[in-house]
Length: 119
Image (cartoon, rainbow, N blue to C red; front, side, top):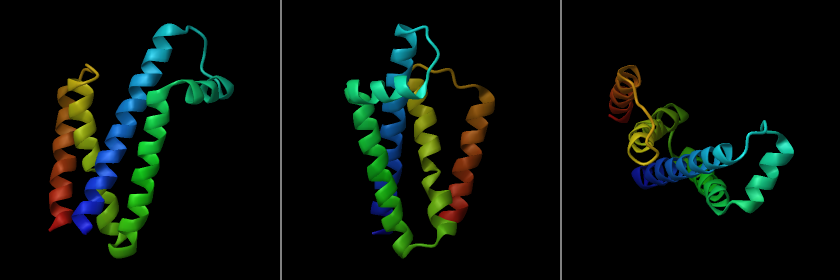
């Protein structure tokens, strides 16, 4: 059950973050005005991917709470950092972001840390 919950935490966080980034970049390209709380709240109700991002993040949050019921925090937090690895790769592949060598090295270090914690 530990790995299933961890997978739900990681995958739903990744989906939520990617959708959130996509929608906010789309809005940023269409509008030159500075972001404000009221404007962001209007965006939340008008952008379907942003609503889906919030739902995905909620799933991740509740799955993380469930994970904490059975696993120590010292496992759950570092293991959930696997989302950083997936997000970096998908940010490059799906969103077309530039991933520098330094960021790639950081992702490899995070991966090494996850391996150490998971054993």
